[in-house]
Image 1: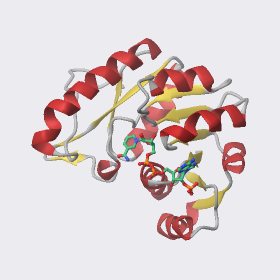
Image 2 (image 1 turned 30 degrees about the vertical axis):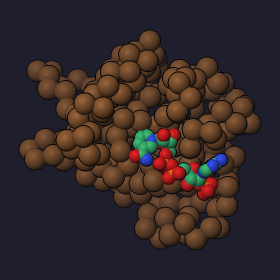
Image 3 (image 1 turned 180 degrees about the vertical axis):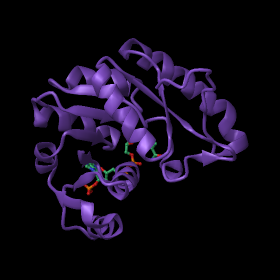
Image 4 (image 1 turned 120 degrees about the vertical axis):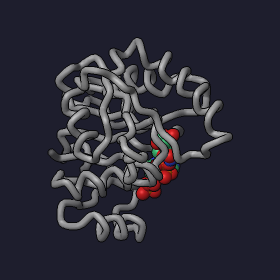
Length: 203
Ligand SMILES: NC(=O)c1ccc[n+]([C@@H]2O[C@H](COP(=O)([O-])OP(=O)(O)OC[C@H]3O[C@@H](n4cnc5c(N)ncnc54)[C@H](OP(=O)(O)O)[C@@H]3O)[C@@H](O)[C@H]2O)c1
């Protein structure tokens, strides 16, 4: 699968390297694709990775990972315009009280937006296993085919994808997880995770 990384920092850089390692073709986008940070990423990601400008990554990809800082998300979506039915994985959060999940759906023109990875600290993306089990990633979206694609991308990097329903669940999940983080982070810092135990694995 051709994956364009929009925001090749901690989240985007880490996920891109992991997906490149399992055979996906990655384009890391940047405001400066020649920067030393991007060259380091390319070296680490190996032969399946290349770099480009944001527009080039959008053109290149079947799937986009949106991992920009909050303040860069709306300008990106406004500038890029029609997403031509591409799958857009929204891993972003924001700090202005609005829901990052629903704002991206509102601004992404003709994008098949899936909410995923936003509840996972970047440090654990390469360490999904806790003791005997692997951490869950909650996936929300209205397009079931796009959800299947993102679910497979989670499995590729050894996470347990969990279908958390349609977009009306974005705000309840963001709110609930925000509260849970407040409860558990004083004890466990950032290196803990959630697993939904269920009889039927499904997604
Ligand atoms: N860090 C986490 O653990 C974590 C966990 C869950 C969700 N998130 C969310 O994921 C998103 C990315 O977080 P991150 O920690 O990966 O961020 P980050 O390390 O700062 O990386 C973001 C990248 O975006 C690019 N960028 C493009 N436009 C920018 C602008 N106007 N200002 C600054 N950088 C710009 C930068 O690359 P160039 O300079 O090469 O363009 C930068 O490397 C955020 O929305 C965050 O809330 C983060």
